[in-house]
Image 1 (spheres, rainbow, N blue to C red):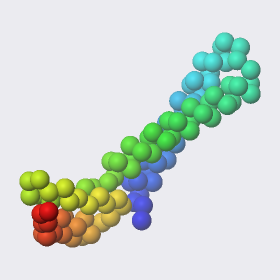
Image 2 (cartoon, helix red, strand yellow):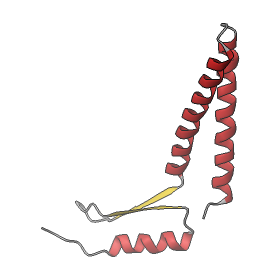
Image 3 (cartoon, one colour):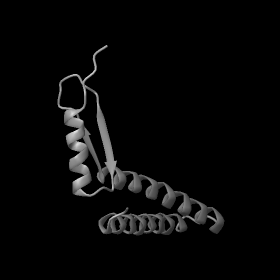
Image 4 (cartoon, rainbow, N blue to C red):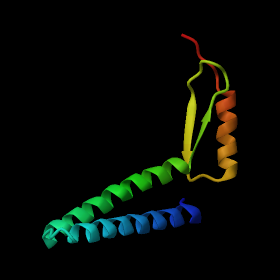
Length: 101
């Protein structure tokens, strides 16, 4: 379930990517770059910027709960969950059985 904040950030990321691609296209058009190459370059830049921004947004909206015991590598990563679900997983991470080999 995506939140309104996540949707707004995604829309903003798309707008920023488009603006950067247009800015690059305007700069390249001054050098006499052919239209087909200019379009391909702008679309490539937009795809790259969008991918990067979407990864940042997803990382920002992900919560990770770890075990508090030193040396334990148990962790749970959650994305797009409500506060109750996040709290439940936080308690599970704190109380999981520790295994030693």
